[in-house]
Image (cartoon, rainbow, N blue to C red):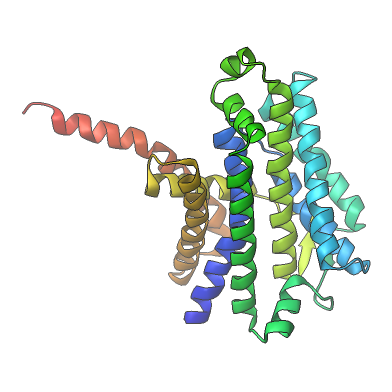
Length: 295
């Protein structure tokens, strides 16, 4: 039972890097970026191919992030230069990345079971079991990513990106090139999503062209769960809330599986969970209105 709990928390931490990427577009830029469903398996495909080709784990992570940056730049170009709505631009990028991922791997999936990954390296170096190795890697990546995001969005450039998402008209009035900020935000977001994809591929022992299905819903679930639990807070607390939301989401999934829910119903369960979380503010306000109604 303890090993299951550790592995579940580890998965939540590993997926939280993707959720942080979704948070940057969904909350900071105020854009629904569906290209994450393509950039997530792109990160896994690039990392797996790099490892199999002998480039090593460190290079695999860097190449995966670079590929994610390119995916985000494409979505940003479609949105800012070609004036395609962000939602549609993300869908177009996601569809295109499916074929690109197949070309990167050369087939539908690439196995890593006989290769050295970040997880097997941690296991052999520190003498840990797979569950603890996953937890260590999840904690390490989450800490580094949250720290870098917090620092970057406190800089002048990061503040400009936040201002663009909060009020584009005001940002332009202050001399900020909002198109550049949107592209940069999408680049950072998709880099994080691809990094998470590279991590999950190594954790699973394979990269698959279909591993990104439902990624956006999982990311939104993590963001919404964290926001519901924390409420209104500062930027750094929101970052922690997203990580917490990702861990709680994985714990809930593990719980419902233990209770006997068929794995085929997990996507449906996630969709219902996100819908309920998104409607909580309305439900809360309606409940308060009914309580205030004179009897």
